Every structure is written in structure tokens, then in C-alpha cells.
Image (cartoon, rainbow, N blue to C red):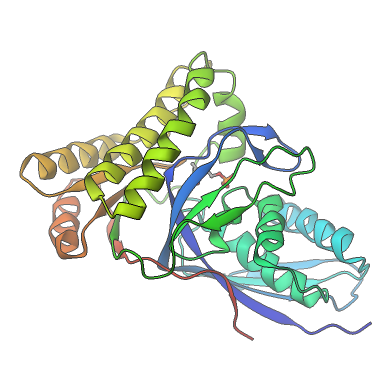
Amino acid sequence: MNSPVTTARANVNLALVKYWGKRDTALNLPAAGSISLTLDGLSVEARVGFDGGAADRVEIDGAPASDGEGARVRSFLEVVRAESGRREHAAVSTRSTVPRGVGLASSAAAFAALALAGSRAAGMELDPGALSALARRGSGSAARSIFGGFVEWHRGERADGRDSIARPVVGPGHWDLRVVAAVTSSVPKAVSSRDGMARAARSPLYPAWIAAVEADLAEARAAIIARDLETLGLVAEHSALTMHAVGLAARPPLLYWRGPTVECLHRVWELRAAGVPAFASIDAGPQVKVLCEPGDAERVAAALRDVPGVERVLVCAPGTGAEVVA
Ligand code: PMV
């Protein structure tokens, strides 16, 4: 069967209540729910065609994928083949506007785009929930990048993960905020989020972290609905710092931060003391992302640009969900 070559684009997302721990590593089922904001302008475009060559071919940003990245995309294609009943090999190429491997969540955008392009190219018309479950198989956080704006990924109860899907918390355009991202290092991180989560799960603080997520989710959900930046920002900062505290207490310890990461945190707290509502978040990398009002974004960006060691600063508005572009 000939299938259409499909290109889809998806944006990265920033988790405000973090996903950090799995209940099933093979299916990427999370130990708890999470809430994110999809960001505009940091996206991945994926082109997929099941053209039946001798093997799957994977190209990333114009060059053949590395062994690790290629293997990850190929095992995702196996999932698409298993779900669709297709057997042909595929040609995949992705193009990113996100610096890869630096903790700006490009894998979330990549696997959300691959899920949409891959399922369509394989002849499937999945509803958004099923698409989210498929994206999750590539990278947990990709489940959230199927949707725009504020998104909650539900833990789910089922062993097969069909109920572990993301959904929008509110309608599009509900709340215009900004995320200011300070890149403190573009060196690829030494510990992937998969390995980091496995290490964190052995931390003595891990059970307390998982036990607290439900309350953080409820607080974040209510704050989003009420457009209450102070409450949302404080819970987001708390979620991020607690996630990193779990890693610090693991053996061997896990610390994604570099010196400028800490300096950026202090700068955010100074801004807050000066009356600017700005709240920090950090993922599995050294970058600092700051949630603030649109009218404060330039001031926040200038303050972060001023921190020694900050290589560049990006300002992102809320973004849309995954879409087919060709
Ligand atoms: O989707 P993964 O496996 O790359 O994990 C993402 C983990 C964090 O970015 C640190 C948190 C999150 O919820 O996105």
C-alpha cells in the first residue's frame, strides 16, 4: 500500500508541575500526573513516509541520526507499525528550531510531531487522546506537546497506558504569559532524563516527592483557571526545586545545574523581591526558564542576560498543539 508522506510540526512544552518518575519504563507511564505550558517558536517538524526501503532511514537536521537517536526513532516506528498494521520501513527527517540535548525539551516536540506525522503516514486517523498516548511512547513529555496552551498529562491507572494521556486544562488563548529561557550551557547533558528518573527513583526523597504531586496538580489547575500567576508561579518553582532535591539526595547524586543556573535563580528571587512576579523552573539540564507576565518579559530577559555565563535568552509566548503542515 502506498501511503502519503506527511509532515507535522509540534512545539516544546515547559512542565509547571514536573513529570519525574515512571510507573512503567517500557510504556513511559508516569508515577504521577504533570501540567505544562506549550511554548511558541521552539518547534520540531517531522516528515515521515513508509516507502518500504531496505531499512528505516532517520535524518536529523540534515544529517544521518547518531546511533542513539536513530535507535530511539526506530523503536518509535516499531510502535507505529504495531498500532497501524503497516510493515514497510520508513524514511524520517526532522528539523528543529530548538538546540538539541540542552534541556529545552526538544524530544517532547520531536515525538509529538513524529506521532502525528507517523500515524497519518501509516494511514491512521487518531483522535487527540490516542495521539497523545502514541507520542508518550517516544518521550513521556511528548504526550503534552500534542496540545497547545496549558495541558495536564494524567497518570492513568491502566497497565496498558491507554488512559495515561494529556488533555488541555483550559481553552486556547485562556491566559497570555511568557516564559523567558536562559541558556547557561549548550554542552549536551551527561545524564538523560530517562537515566535521571531511574536514579531519582532510588533516592530516599522519591516517595515524598510522588506523594506531594497530587496537591501540586490541584493547586496549579485552580491557579490556571483563576489566572493567578503568584500561586501558579510558586507551585511551579516548588515543583522544579523539589524534583532537583530528589536527585541531589540520590546515590550517586544527580545535579543538572551549573554555576550560572544558581545565579539565575538568585536573579529571579531578586526580581521578585523588587516586585516583579517572576518564577523559575529547571528541567533535566542547566537552563533556567522563568514564568512571568508579558509586560515584564523584557525586564526579566535583561536581568538574566546580565548573569555571567548566560549564553543567550529566549522569550516564548504560549504555543499551539501539534499540526499537520504538509
Ligand atoms: O519526556 P522526558 O522523558 O524527556 O522527561 C521530561 C522530564 C522533565 O522535562 C524534566 C519534566 C517534564 O515534565 O517535562
